[in-house]
Length: 309
Length: 309
Image (cartoon, rainbow over all chains, first blue to last red; front, side, top):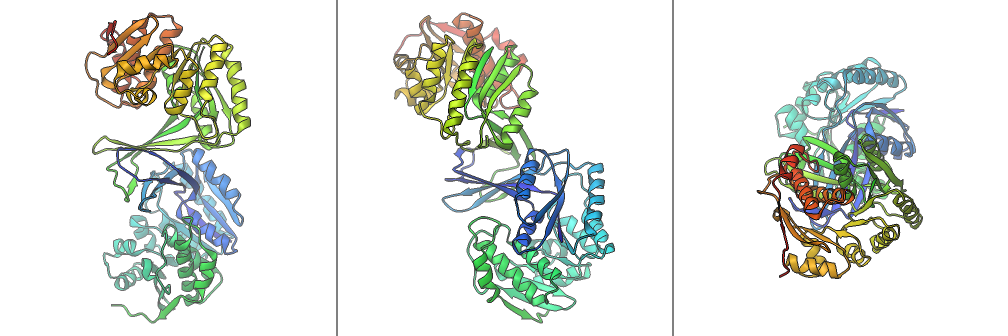
């Protein structure tokens, strides 16, 4: 199975309002809810691709119960979230029906106690024993040490399990130094890590910092990959219009599935780009449009041998 | 005991953000949650004044469970909310820390099925048997007929229980025609009911429409009351600064407690104004500052014999 870790799970709530005006009162016309946090999004896409996935991390309070109830009814996903005393955070996306723009309100997440963090590390080590690969995804909740991902990367490497790290800021900086098999920063995260806004140069720098491979997601420009096996660019045939929420998580799912299936790099990148674009095209945020995905698999352009600037 | 009815209960959530900017992503710095809906707010104030209160209405889903858990730990309040298949709504107040202004997002509430509405009407009739007074408060959730309050007023009158109606729009218009003992509209609700923006004239009109007594809340100008026993104005000695959320509900609690204690009208109005102002003065939305309340009880000015324009 593939293991995904989401330390700061979320109940993702979407509100539609006619027009968002600060200091006014708004009647929400439509409410949707789903389990969120990057690792849960990655798991859902992997399961839709036919993989067995186990999700771990933390869940607590009334929001945590909602998430776990929903996961139980998601085929192919095994819930191994650990209970915590605090309540799982909510994220609220307020969609303005007039403009289509989204305003995001993110709760910080529950404070994790030292015994809860210790219990997680033990459970994680046990789960790795039956994992073909692991993805460490998203932000850290309060109370989890900033070097947490570095430790989890080392534990995975010691267990011989390939490890993908998808986070940002200081947790990414520290995690990279522990030598993960793959990181998947977006342009901003890569620039923050390396200090360079030039993707080729920044990717090189990220390799030097310890990542075995780097796949940078450059929005509508597709992916830029640097690995021991080579360098590639992969891009969709045309710009896809829609909601980019979850596109990066779908790319991680594509890369992970390609990794456990031992696909050549160009095929992994094709899958990641096709899934990512099919997620942008889907009407529901974070879902992917299977027809678009299958069409794009034939049409993603992969260029090899990209040179550093 | 005093019975309060809240058909559209809510989980009231308050978020503090540094500055609310449409289309941006915000980190919420502080989250607070409490059971809401006008009837629950009225009940909390009545309980704080030492009355036994029973709350009824609907609760469902994860949000409903949170509300019921919290009510269980509120001294003096008995939870008689009925379970429904839909989920109790959330209301989100986003407080801008820079300006102190609030942006409100209100979910519509669960759809109530005809069997759920029938079950409520039966439970309500049973609860009236031991009620000294009943307050019908707030908006109607989807599925509840617009004439719902008219029916509930008639049931209370048939049972000989004094009934206070605090709602707005068409539910208020229909409810008034069923002859409630008291309505407590604010200036906007009164104008919507009567078509007149002149409070004295509008109050007279509301009496003609069927209300036995009308207490109009005029914001910082205090209360204007018209009853068979006379007419009064009641106002705080000075403008109180703070958050007006819940001030109207505290006024209803003051009027209800005065009613069951058979206080003369001026004393009921004094209590209502003092509670209302003490709610504006309290740091937490919807709570009241007991010290301010007790001070104001001595200082509210009640003028009798107000003439219609």
